[in-house]
Length: 321
Image (cartoon, rainbow, N blue to C red):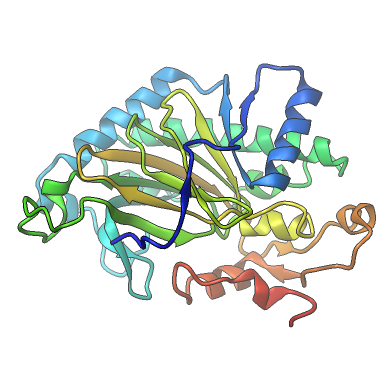
């Protein structure tokens, strides 16, 4: 159930919408401002082909409409990249969601699917979009070119694509008596968390449910816009900017009326990549270095050992209260 004590403000309140067809310097400045103020924004006129988007969405809808036994067959034992339902991570978190999880550099699992071609095309398109956004970010911060994008361009980058399907109320997994008015139709589909990687590029169908936490700790509902991509700052980008950017907390609710489909590309570096505040960010901000240097492999291991809502970055701060 959703906690009633957490205040929700107006839909899309203070959420930036960035038109990527504008002059390049304007786009880069807007991206930096959005990452500083909220850690979340939408992009339109992003250049991703609509055919690629539509094909991925329709193939995903077709997959999740299959009988449970067919979907579960795409679930290798002890493999993290697979079909799953309800379980989120390895530490007891769960939600009203079923999903497909792909590693972007491992075609073996994708080859099991009838729509592997659609997945491959989509991954390449959103990866290119993520690289462009990160290059624009570097330009806006006046740090060396490709400071961020090089980390996800490597052949051994650890990026992931996750397709989440949030079913309507009459299809909640294992639920009964949903016609009973005492049963809330607003559920937590995917609980409150930050993303541990560098950047997330997400798109959903025309059904709402995504909420982000603003600087006052209140939830802002994000209106669905199938023509836009949502972008949020991950933990690693907060570290590399020495805290100038905000790794935004967010969650997904289900309202019990329509299916929601979201597809998220989590842009991650190679496991051995060293992550720490960029020297330019420490000097220009005129403040102490806030975070230690660590490898993505070390941080990932910690992140996946904790619960979804746990704060991870505090464990890597240079000064702890």
